[in-house]
Image (spheres, rainbow, N blue to C red):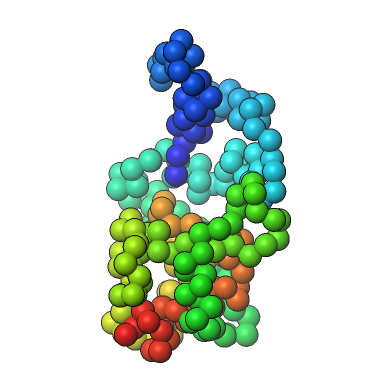
Length: 214
């Protein structure tokens, strides 16, 4: 998670252009600003449009504020990590009907879909999870990121015990519940994916028929 100061600097550099303006922006690295200064700059420079809102950038919850202090998540103090994980685990909402598994074919479409939460998207339109941006899932997909671990053979290696199912759901719903300050989005907690979409991604990971487990 980037700090507000980092986002402000990036914004200044993007807005500065070239020449004298670029030099001025470069000097911003040494300028001491407060969170209030940064918030004012963002609010005055950007306009909310569609799902992309100014409030979504400047309004941080307790976990985001804590993690913003440590851009390098490997340096998060153990005590803070434990506190964050305990707090976020309480926010995980499991299916009321105890139905965790959906359709892996729909899950694959969600995993390949990177659209959503942008100013050009329609409010209320379903988002994608863009899983391949960070993980390998299948052998057929030759383009994928490696920020996160490979999930190929996820269910085949782990099985489908109730503990595995609940852990997997919780990890998708709120990644910080199991790994404080994770780079992975909190898909359920932040409303990025619907409960049914999470069921479908669960099926992609755990269904024996899914290409993930072939």
